[in-house]
Length: 309
Image (spheres, rainbow, N blue to C red):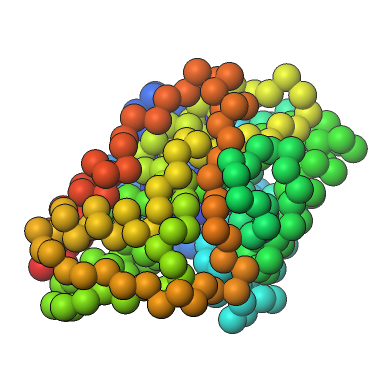
């Protein structure tokens, strides 16, 4: 089976490439950044094209690798903050990229199964219980809005042209090599000798933390099992909520320090109190999350200390 991954050089993309290659699949990538030959070999990537997701590059990759049976679409914006600072840039990276890919597949590889990697940010900030796929979508950031537009494009191409898609809404993905967000921020402060950690919000905010190696296994499972319908939406979350206060405690404990953690009480606009998946639909795939949050965070701290002593 020929597999393409857009954004294969990104945080999740690199783990997914390795996971699929380990399963004996032919994996080819397209996206930004140079990948040296030894690194490409380590990832198990047969071909890599450094460039935009546009027809000329898609044609070039097809000439090298053959037409894809499955495309994992990970390319696009990856930060709420950046989307607020540069909304049009995020729109271009996320929406226009997806439109180029879907249109090319419609005309060139219409039998392809597209796995669209979306985000729980499409749900917005109003929900306070476990979120099912049928919940109202009301994104509050350009990032979430653009992810929702990509989902709508995928649905349109599925219903109008029969281009089969599975949308996976990921929640709070973390793991080694992630160089942003809460874990990174706390580790940076601890490395710099912070005597107290002051974080935003109340500390009671609940998130559905999923380790990137589990996420790669989930995406591989979804991609290798096309849905029975033209388009399917699946929450990529465990259903287990962990508070920000607990996460901070796990990090400091793994670091080996007893640093007080305080919270400003000021939440970022649109930041939800609870963002935890209802995993009922995912459970029908008999998928099991293997890495507990406390274990995964401890491994993240070990990685960080090894990289940034």
